Length: 246
Length: 246
Image 1: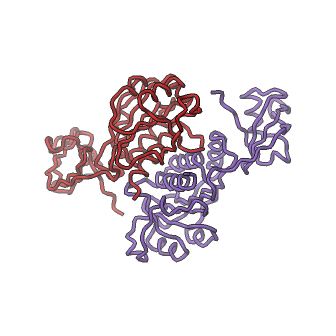
Image 2: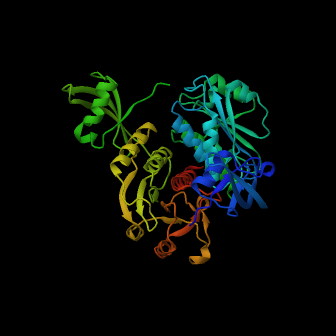
Image 3: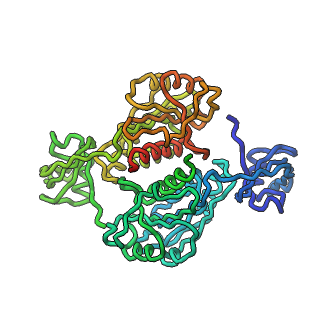
């Protein structure tokens, strides 16, 4: 199977050109010539089919694009999927999560600074690069939104139009006596869903209680004991599967 | 939360001791003393609770275990989950799959040598190590079986008592006209399930046809275009989720 190369150019409709990085890849690596076919996505729901016009200097190649067709892309999941996670100490694990979650498909990745967080700072530029390449590799036209690290209390205070869930290991009797839902069962096909996944040391019980007060409901991902990044990916899988299953 | 350390000793009932590697960890790293509590699994469905008796020399520490209680562990999924995959060229990706699949929970990981395989040789000792540490880390008492690389034709000819599925990107009209099932819908809670995932270049159409002749049915994991290792993990997620969901 010939591999289709998809370029990312968020402002292609205005610039009619690829970024310097993408231009370099097109001209230097793929050796594109005048008139070669190119596929571009703006990461906002559109694929653009057109022809390439390499230009610029050897040091600073440019690749202009003559757009011939615009193809809107509708994500297979009918309502938004958002996942907020306390990043692991080991960045590889959270970068892995960002790549896989983007392949499976979601709308937003959010990072939480929690009481038991092992990492308080995260370079979202690297996560952005990973998310963009996973979007291109999996032929999607929607770049997940990646938000900066946010303090837990500030994050749960934000407005979210949809179902809000928090995964934790405490007994519900220690929270508010409500039942802990199985995420897959709780997810609604047509209602946006947000899930919070805590650090390796779990959320503090005060954080869980605060989330409940803010309208979050407790969920479980099943009986398996999962690492933070695995739990985050499985939460995305539960949401994506429930929303896309017939 | 205090981290419980689980040791792996497949023959604990005969040896009443940990392996040299596990003994070294117990004595040198965890500095266990005579009478300290230890938890051990045989990876065959049992947890053993007992006390440690460090011994041996400084160079070759030994850790004997006096077993006090045996706790049988029943996996949360009621019927077997087997995944066969053509390993990726990049070993990190397949090692990552082995770790995550074990955390989620399955019974067997099998490696396929296919027409379009990018890797014909795989060191299963490394995969065994990863699977053992993921089993211990996720507090399971069942070590997934890891089988050596097997030629595709030989693998599909093996007996399997359960439902057999193959994931591929061909049109069903090019195979045998049967419908392509959505894996999550096709999985039965109480029937063992085996899924085959192909290499980055997909199975050859002849391989898919041969699998159908051998009783495999075609499945899809959904509309997302997934890398080999992501498809393999999602297949495990579909099976585990369907079998464990209430």
